[in-house]
Amino acid sequence: MVCIEALLNTGSTIDEGRLAKGGDKYSDAYTQECAVCWLNEVDYAALGFPEKVKVIRRDGQRSVLVYTKCTNDMRCGHVFMPRAIWANVVVEPSTFSTGSPLYKGSLVTVEPAEGEVLSAEDVVLKVYMGGE
Image 1 (cartoon, rainbow, N blue to C red):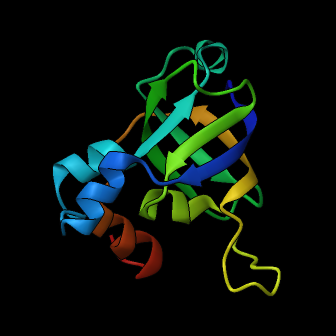
Image 2: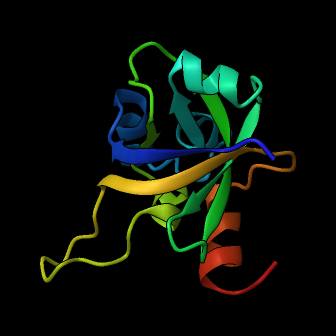
Image 3: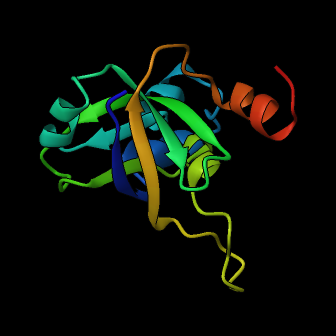
């Protein structure tokens, strides 16, 4: 299977902030805005132009299926995910005694994927509560 290793950076987007602060974390609009992995066009092409990708944490313990967004705003070998539950699944869990996980520069594997992109509520239930 084709895959790339990349450095994951996360952060707020204008619409992520607007939706989150507006109480719309369970809306389809929030999922469309935040369940996304931004890729450079070269990396996107190397993956075969997928509609969705699986982003896998370095240790392979956690992964999340998200939509893709091709943009020249990214550098090759770097991906971006809006700061939300989908990114939280794959950021490095160690806080290095700071109390905050590593939201910038986590090594991840990205591979084309098929399947359902889960809502925020379903991610919490599946990943953190052990349900389906």
